[in-house]
Structure formats: structure tokens, C-alpha cells
Image (cartoon, rainbow, N blue to C red; front, side, top):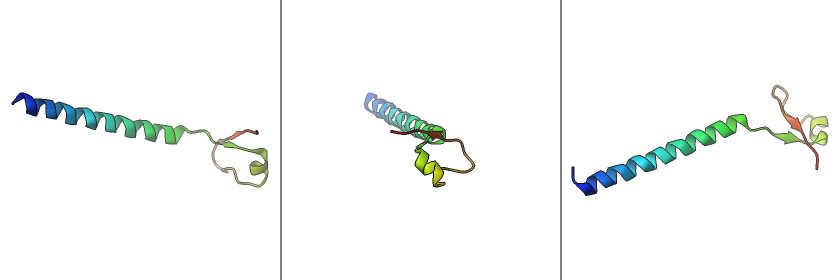
Length: 58
């Protein structure tokens, strides 16, 4: 394998690795996000019913 091909392969694998890591982090964050709802939203039943959430106010 020529040095140019080896370097191109290394760059391709590095880009694929970074893309995979970004996808994994994004998916993990989406499933673990905690959403804050105001007391008004909770009183008007805008908060999720079968899931945990936090009540926050400004």
C-alpha cells in the first residue's frame, strides 16, 4: 500500500470514528434529557403523564 493510500484510509477511518461517536453521544443525550416544566404547564396538563420531569420556574 502506498503512503498516500494509507494516509487516505487513516483519514477515512478517523472521520467515520468521529461521526460514530457524535451519533452515539447525541442518542445518549436524547434519552437522558430532563425537561423542566413550569408550574403553570403542570397545572394545565402539558407535562408528560407517564414520565419523570422536573418543575422549574423563572
